[in-house]
Length: 97
Image (cartoon, rainbow, N blue to C red; front, top):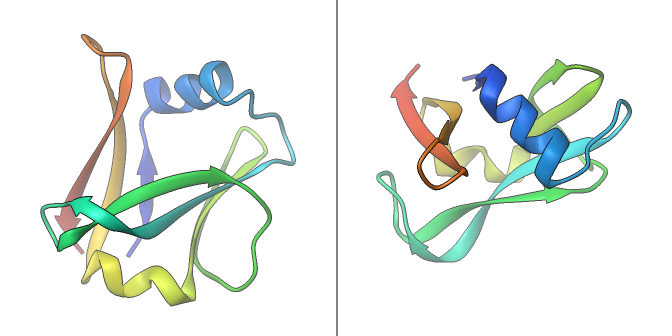
């Protein structure tokens, strides 16, 4: 399992969340909503320090990660993060690892 961010997504994090080198962005399972993988759960993002990293990638000095306790949410899929240009919002897709 891995996290793949497009250049546009990386720019979005810099512009919309004011991330800087040394910051940490967490992807996590949250109760509510829906995803292609789990009904009743959706993906959340938050700028915060890590506890126990399960999966990580570092780009532009920023750590993007998923905690071990949230790995179940991805069910053996890679997380791909892009931007919907019409909405200027992040788009998440899940590809079998």
